[in-house]
Length: 382
Image (cartoon, rainbow, N blue to C red; front, side):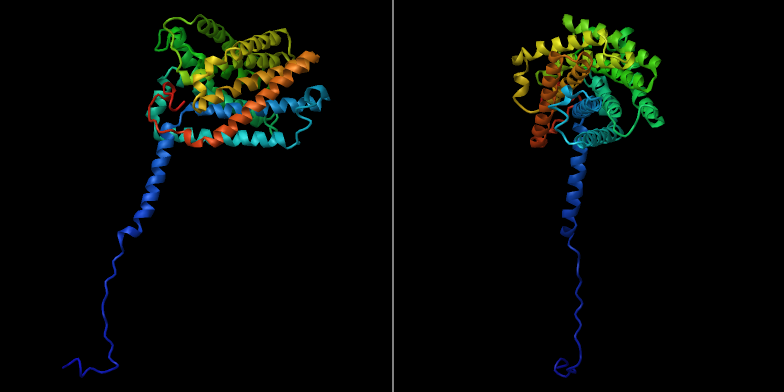
């Protein structure tokens, strides 16, 4: 009865309690968790072997700089079909790409060191992984030498040289010391083609020091690298029964046999100021090793069945060999020398471009899902 007597203007208020459904925030949280998991997986699976990409691009930038210097010196035969047809900004663009790639790889590896140091330690203890710890510093030294913005006579160049060379010397003391004394790494047991990266690191630092005019420092690094290269080359050549072999998927690293003497010829060229007999002998050695490897394509057949970042091991040695052939052609100025230079330079650029394209098309295979603390022994990652 009270309901019928109520005023028509009277408002009836109904209290409705609205509760926020937890499903409205769950998708956001799931996305954040998924992103964190993805980043964590990338850091876990990332390793120093990925610096092969930076090595190749940085060496390509150095090759193009050498070709440009040949053009500036009026040596038209060297760059008639190679550099003169390219726009003037091509070199700066390539150097910028190499800088971005190397910088990105360095940041990712630094995060790995901070968040997953136990895996970095396991990488250091691996007989293959430890050698790739030289790769980032070699990349930065090559990038420094090919820089279009820094002169070797500047103070910034000197500071950067120290920053990139000191870690190489620290690794030298640790690794070479264990080779020489009774340590955990007996050279006859751990020697493999990637061991030559330690030599290449010393030679890259020597070349950069010589460009600054620091001849004594350059000679120190050169003698340190060449002394160990001689011992290492003999050890690898003999293939002692106890030596550690490399997995099938890592066979492309055999091309590092080419890179070490080629880098040595360039380092001695920087020290002596001319591509003299010693530099030519080292270049001829690397050329012979190159012919020996390309004449055995079946050796790399199994490693080419499935894409892996190890394929970038082809590019860097070819780029160093092409760079040495360019300096040889500039010194000899003969038709055969220029033909060798043009052929090797074209091959180097072609291989680098093909690898860039294949890598772009197979980015989903860069981190295939293995969480092994020693990825260098796993064909799935390498």
